[in-house]
Image (tube, rainbow, N blue to C red; front, side):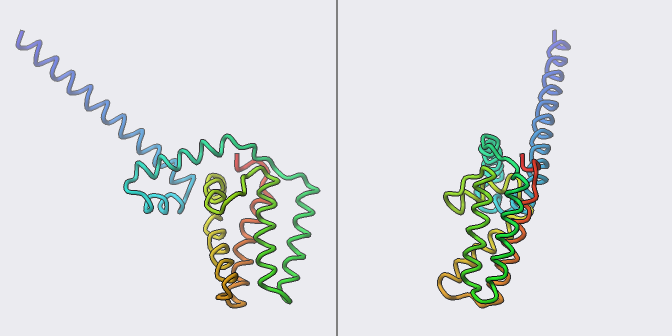
Length: 182
């Protein structure tokens, strides 16, 4: 009987070790997928939370909310129209840089809306964009920050030029993307 108990204990211990190993492997796979999908946004969200698990749950919730959206590619005619509007905004930058930056922000929001992204608040836009546009998200943050400084008249012309460059990175990605964000 003692041998049977020892065998049972060993079997239970082995099953427990395998189960813990499996759970840990699943967490590592999930973490790796999130890091790949979100890039630098992953680390930024982790830094904002008390622990990694909470941050990863937030990122997974973003993916789930994003999946509920009807993100669609732009028709060629819309892409052409937006591209022309962007060129017009860039031309206006020479004479009215602050106005051009405001227009660039509005144009990015218009493309987002037509593609099916919610455009209510900046943080909400970031959350939705982070799922499919993590690589250009930092550009959008920097452009928005400069726009805020420009509104307070605290941005130089060079700052405004940088804002245009940052807005253009996201704008071009949104414009040219077909179904990659899905």
